[in-house]
Every structure is written in structure tokens, then in C-alpha cells.
Length: 265
Ligand SMILES: Nc1ncnc2c1ncn2[C@@H]1O[C@H](COP(=O)(O)OP(=O)(O)OP(=O)(O)O)[C@@H](O)[C@H]1O
Ligand SMILES: [Mg+2]
Image (tube, rainbow, N blue to C red):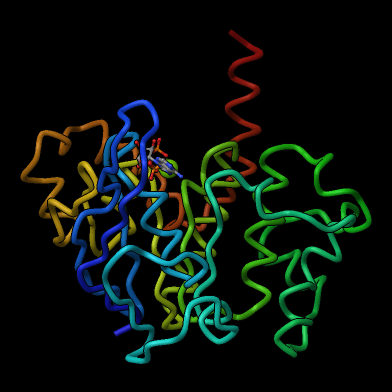
């Protein structure tokens, strides 16, 4: 088991309601290696709060989290190295003056040999950006740097909070391929997303959040098929991407073709 969460609860003081409220309410779940697990749910349902506890940086009010059957102390180096979290807003995790320094920081810290150029290829980042200030990059480029900076620590568990936001569709496609490779290499990947076609096509499991609780924990295809979300649009769109993938059609050539069609109209 990659991560086992038992009874995770977080109470916070909500000034507008002048009382303590459970933002996370008695969450128990297993995350498995070699699986892509989706976390979905309405805005404000607790998805981002939940994943912030999975790398041991914050302490819950109650509950335990074990990583690969071990219980680490909060803020332990080992926990941080094993579980990489890419936050919803990438700028929150970029703090160094250049992209290169961001990308090598975790590797250096954990004594890992890193080929920065190879990492750039992996995350689809143009190497000419290496000496730039990461805060001056576009949202999509910043996201790629944030993903690279987390991957450089060689985590066994990778957690990404809405990583497709701000990425154009060819970058989304490349990221999807990277996540699939990581999953096939045995890593556990957890992704918070609102993209149900992605969940249908690529995720083995889905966890549905509602008001700080997990209300569904099941295999994603049967959940989508049996719910109101299993419509033609969800399933058809994802089939289009998977067909491109199967036929090894270059995504950029499709994009160029679409742009040409738009110009013509
Ligand atoms: N530090 C905090 N203090 C008080 N309330 C908080 C704090 N952090 C989060 N919350 C509240 O917890 C709830 C869950 O927030 P969270 O960011 O986890 O939602 P989410 O499911 O990720 O939503 P979204 O889809 O919009 O990203 C929200 O009502 C939010 O206002
Ligand atoms: Mg969120």
C-alpha cells in the first residue's frame, strides 16, 4: 500500500461563522502503488486541504497517515521525499531565483543525481527557460516547473492538484502521457481534477469528496457509467484522445490542422 489514511480529521476556526468546523471529517482511504487515483468533488469540498496532509507538512487534528506501511514524524525528510505534492497554485511552491535552481533543489537536498536536460524533456519544458525567473513565466510554464521540481526528488507517490489548469491541450496530452509512464513504473499517482473524461480514460479509481468526507471510493469507469456523468460528451472526448495515442498521431500536427481550419472559416 502506498498511503493508508485512517480517521483523518481537521478542525479549523471559521471567522465568518465564529465557530470551529470540520474541514476534513474522519477520512479513511488506501492509495495503491501502480494506480492513478482521481479526487473529484465540488468546489470547497476539501480536496486541496486533504492532499496538503499527505506529505506530512501539516498536522491534522486527528487521524494517522502511513506511507508504504511506515508512520513518519511530521515534516520528516523521508516523508517529504517519498510523497511529492504539486499544489493547485504553482506559484506557491516556487521560491528560487531561476528555473534551473527550482528544478535541482529537491534532488540536491536528497542527494539524487539529476540530469536537468532530461528532466526538461520529461516535463516538456523548453530548456531556454532554465536561467529565467520562474515567477515571470506563464501559468502553464510555471506549472511545468512545479511538476519538475517535485519529480526531481524521485517520489514514490506523486500528488497533483488540478495540474491541467492553464495548460493548452497538447501540454495536457503530454502530461497525461507522463503520468501514465509514472504509473506503469509502479508509482502511485493521485490527481485532483474536474475533468471527468480524464477520469474515465486514465484513472483506475475515483474518490468523490463532499463536505470534507469521501462519499464514493470505487473504480472510476463503473462510477461514471452508473452516474449522470456517463454521457456521450465525457466518454466520446476521452476516446478521441486515446485514439490519437493508439495511432501514435502527433498532437502538434492535429493542432496545426485545427488552426488551419479555423483560419479558413
Ligand atoms: N486555513 C483555512 N482556514 C479556514 N478555512 C479553510 C482553510 N483552508 C481551507 N478552508 C476551507 O475549507 C474548505 C475546503 O477548501 P479546499 O480548498 O480544500 O476545497 P477544494 O475542494 O480544493 O475546492 P476547489 O475545487 O475550489 O479547489 C473551504 O470551505 C475553505 O474555505
Ligand atoms: Mg482545491
